[in-house]
Length: 431
Ligand code: EPZ
Image 1 (cartoon, rainbow, N blue to C red):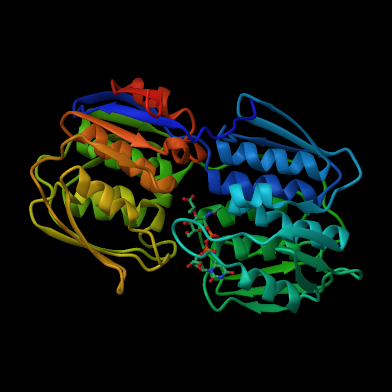
Image 2 (tube, rainbow, N blue to C red):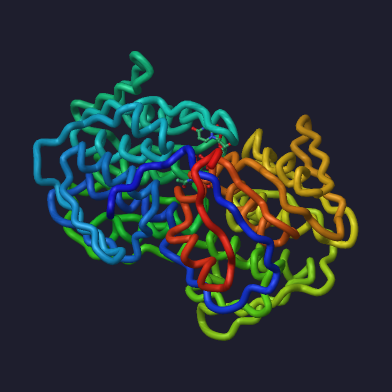
């Protein structure tokens, strides 16, 4: 991985173009690669992960793992990870402030070495993003947790012990952290109200290959029998359902016929049904290949984001762009994060007609005939993807500031879009 750094001065300039055609492919899932990479802390033997996307976030995780003492070789999306040095059981604020998923090293470090010092993640654009549920669950497993100078200091000198954990809220990385803590704990851990996302199941599959005893991943109850140690494994990261859904919305608005390879239909059932109801025809032309053309008449919809397997919050900004062109009034209720409608104001700058009721976390979208290019801002990862779609669907030129968010989660996205005819270029702000 050519260790990338985010360039906060970059602007992406996009020419509106609704006649894109050709082939897109979906890369490995960011939100599966990150916990899978953290699992390398659990063993002295090597992990070989295939289909690891080359992203800002996976780069950040890799730098963090290197600092912890794990050597890595990354080539053509294949990542080899192996503990080679004395472990440095800490994750500084530099990493955690860049990427909240750094919290995923806490469970593995604590269960294997009995100690971890991880910076407390701050909030981010979409919400306060606490980790209280992670910490409460680790305490229940016997960890002593204190906060000092903004860091979580976690100790378990006699190791962690299995117990029953019931999450009062469904948390994806919370489930992943506790699953990784439990695989080396003494005895059995039962996680109730577990997250059912495919990325949780993918991590469980990797851990099982390493020798862990896990049942029920993908359901709301996961049972883990602690083992003494874990060994080596080779594992391919699942495709990114959120990138796939992002491409589906792009194709429905701008495509003269776009083929999407590695489209994980089985992880997108609710999303696909929603698109069908809006009037988008997703043609399955192979086990994991979708073909989508620009929809003629888009119907309004009423959507609620919920935990998997329902409509994913990470596709909420993207579907808002699609509904901006529907013939009627749509509604989106955001149930997962308290502040995930910032893209609405940016879309309104392009001529959309969206009103946000922030008290009830509802956006009302009145369809418009067209959007017109303008200067806008990307506010977070998925909002930046929505702005790119909007810029391509708009007439004229759109300039997106703070575009660095996009490169956190979409591998080689500029090249992928240029391959289907998109005209975009990066500029330094003000030039
Ligand atoms: C994961 O974040 C994903 N990130 C997010 O994707 C995704 O939006 C989110 O799950 C929901 O699906 C990764 O997997 C790396 P949560 P996570 O814990 O685990 C509250 C993207 O764009 N909560 O499931 O941090 C929390 O505030 C990113 O790729 C607590 O209150 O989300 C939220 O309201 C954005 N206390 C809700 O639960 C806790 O201890 C769900 O959060 C933990 C969470």
